[in-house]
Length: 339
Image (cartoon, rainbow, N blue to C red; front, side, top):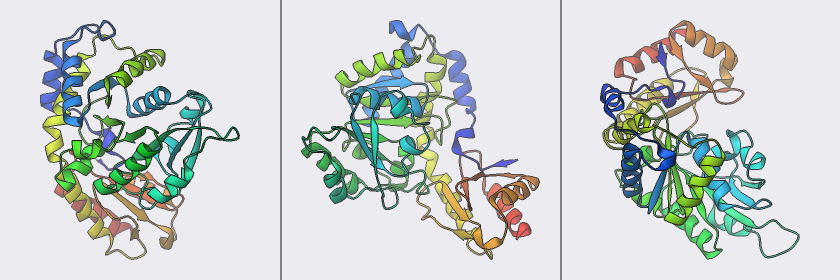
């Protein structure tokens, strides 16, 4: 099967498996796992932050950030299709007791002018704005890159109102690779950031949250409260180190293949590529084909291609390090045959 459902299906490389086997470990709750310490130090350095914390997943990292920054009754501002709002099971309400204020964005980007209007003033009728969230790259905008200049403008609004800004940077390494800029140039315009090690970077599990030392100290307690206290977890931290270094340098290959896939799909009758393909995600509109998304997915599966629905009439295809040039050609051939 050619699996284009997500970059989360990547499996660890041989170097990662070897590093897992050889990892020096200890009880991380006691602060005794040297491999985790090494990962957190390296991550903080790469991300340009004072400190970092290894967490089990991107969702856990985002939720810890909300819990650490906010008080119950606060409001957080985010783009209407943000992962934290759309895909995390309402956890910000269930755990943090905060409400959301969503703003319609352009390719995942909130207008700084609209953001400035959305921040709540000092009025007993309103919840206090406790946090502003951004996402880069933006999943539901088709892997769109939020430019550094835009991040700077949003961060300036947050700073003027003394509101922290958290970046869901699950695929931030993709943005940095595509623009050929250090990832710290993005994160300098954030208070805190979460990055996933288990998507395009290929580690088997885990994410990093980073910020100043005071934030990470509080975040560590929230991780424990959420059941995320980890023991001999160096076996997972070791591939994370390889993910942030060796694997980060090859992400642009995925973007090239995604654009090749998109170019081929644009030639097909009754299908439309509806996103600007910045990185490794291609979104296909099937409405004019007179076939439901379910039919498309089943017919693709019969031809050895796996994809996921992305809306009532859209399909998402995601490239990653297991996808080859030959796989792209086979995928296009399958779409051609179905059409």
